[in-house]
Image (cartoon, rainbow, N blue to C red; front, side, top):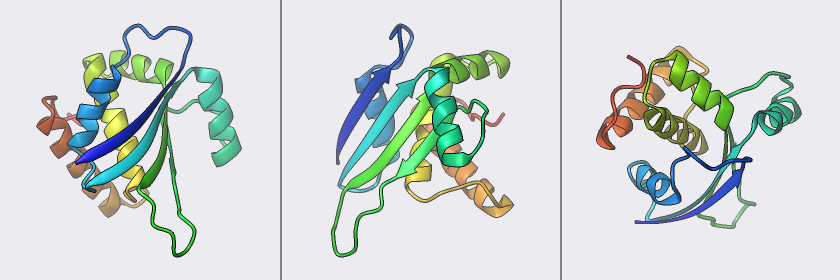
Length: 148
């Protein structure tokens, strides 16, 4: 399996962030295509708030946004899309939820990537399926169930 990872660090300070290699390893536990391309963009509060308002009409902060790529008809593409994650929200949630920071980063990357693969949590049955997959993948990469 080959994954082309475009990691974009749009934050003032890179300390405490997962490395590109670490994110790549987390993604290999998730992506099932033999070759996939994905962009992970780590941003500050202002950018995620602007994106959340622009694309979802919400003026609030959020932890992760996913933008699946939809190829034009009759064109095959391995590009899954973009996952945008807010550093401050992830760090704050890890503290509030009493989770190791890297475990929460892994969860947000897996969560956002599953959205690119078509999973969502709008309806209860869809949420249960997505949470089961997230938990399975998170445990596979060595972290505890993120929903406990």
